[in-house]
Every structure is written in structure tokens, then in C-alpha cells.
Amino acid sequence: MATLKPSPRIRYLFAVNPTAVLRLGLWGVLSIVLMTVDHRYQGLNDVRDVLATAIYPFHYLVRLPADAGNWLSENLASRDALLAENAQLREKQVFLNVQLQKLTVLEAENRRLRSLLESAVNTPERVLIAELLAVDFDPYRHHILLNRGRRHGVYAGQPVLDQHGVIGQIIQADPLTATAILITDPNHALPIQINRTGVRTLAQGTGNFQELELPHIPNNEDVKIGDLLITSGMGGRFPRGYPVGTVTKVEFDPGSPFAHIVAKPVAQLDRIREVMLLEGELPAVKPEPGSAVAAVQMP
Image (cartoon, rainbow, N blue to C red; front, side, top):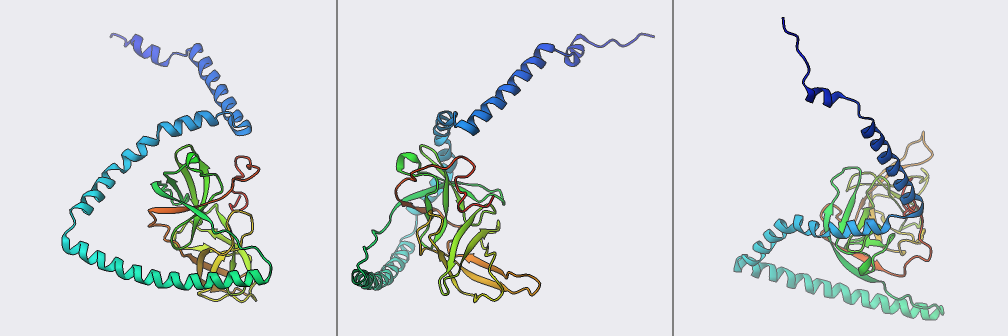
């Protein structure tokens, strides 16, 4: 009976190649050295910028079908639909003009009061408009990619808002794009205060676009459903007074020193298309990697 002999190809497949093992070890050591240098001394920032610039056109290619569909729907809309939309916009413009007149009166009154107190009037913040390029679909990472970067004046820690209120802040700024973390991200916490009572606390993300948690509020504190939450100005990231959310649930637990309070963000985080970046001066000292949002991000 003839015996089966392994072919040369099979013997080569399972043979131990010392040169290949040595090469693998050298690549592994090189990888560890590069990661250490990048983490400690930021030695690969230029390489990261080049790669981010190289993949920038692909973000637009991914959005090209959706943009083409929107362009076709807008240019092929019927005359009746355009007339109805035009009428709605006129009504909205009249309403906004009335609201603007009220705000103008309040601003003038505020200036008069500040002049009586010999206090300087704060200059209104400037904003930079940015559009979304991509959204992270990981349920535990609420990040968005914007089409503005360092060349447009974007920097890490810059506040991000929409027409309703606070959305989040920039955590990474590349030359042409920037990544923002939303306030509902589980690793994010925002210093806020209750507008009605002035109580200060944190608004922590829960991983749900519709919920924020307010920890460390005692059971005997005056908190009601419907209370407006605004930025407290603590931490030096967000200016004071911007809307964040409204309280939707208040539960007092006699067995715990703190109440369970849940709020809903005023911004429509799952529907945003354009955002506003508050322009300001760059931080004098940039924090080290890993602590860029330490003032408002949970460890």
C-alpha cells in the first residue's frame, strides 16, 4: 500500500521561518516605539495631518449621492410646493422680526443698567457655520465630523451650538475637518446651572440623544419639571447663559442623599445638519492629549 507524502507546498506552509519571525518582532517593536513617541511627544502630528488631508475628498464622495438627490428634489419641486414654502417662510420671518424687536429692547435696557453699574458691555460672540460630513453610528460614541478645520480657525475645546442651544465641543481639529463630541456622549459632562434657582451641577451624557443626567443634586433641592438648564460658564469652555436642556424627570429617593434628575437637550442632536462654532481666542496653553476636554469630559 502506497504511503501519502506531503507535497512541498504544504511543507513550506507549516515550516518555521526564523527570518519571518525576526521581521515580525522588529515590526512589533517599531510599532510600540511609534505609538509611544506619538502619545508622549506628539511626534506624528504632521503625518496625521497629511493623512487627514488625503482622506478629506472621500468624505465628499460619500455625501455625493445624498447631495445629488437633494439638489434634484429642490430643483424639480412643483410650483405649488414652492409657493406654499414661500408663504411659510414669510410668516416665519414676520415672527422672527417681532422676536428680534423684543431682544433689541432687552439689549438696550441691559446696556443702560450696565452703564449705571459702570460695567463694560460684553462684545457679542462671533460664530462660524459648519456642515456635517459624517456621524459616528456607535451608540456609545456620539461624535460628528464637520467640514471646517484649523485653516478656518477651529480649535480643540471650541463650543458647538445650533439654533436651539448647546450641542457639544470640538475634541480634534485637523487642517480641513474637525471632530466634535456631543453633550449626550457617555464620556461628556457639561457644567450647567438651573436658570430658575441658580443651582450649579453637571449635565452628563447617557448615550441617549434625548436624555441628560444631573447628578449630585440633594433631595431637598428645589428642582421642578420644566426648569431650564443653561451653561454656568464654569470650566472656561462655554460662555454663561446658553440653553442646554429642560428637566423632564425628578425622582427623590429617601435611601440616597441625591435625587435622580433627567433632562432633555434643547438641541435636536439626532437631526442637525449645520452647526455654529463660537469664535474666540485660542487657549494660551494647550492641554496634553487625553485631557483635552478634561474640564467637561468624564474620565
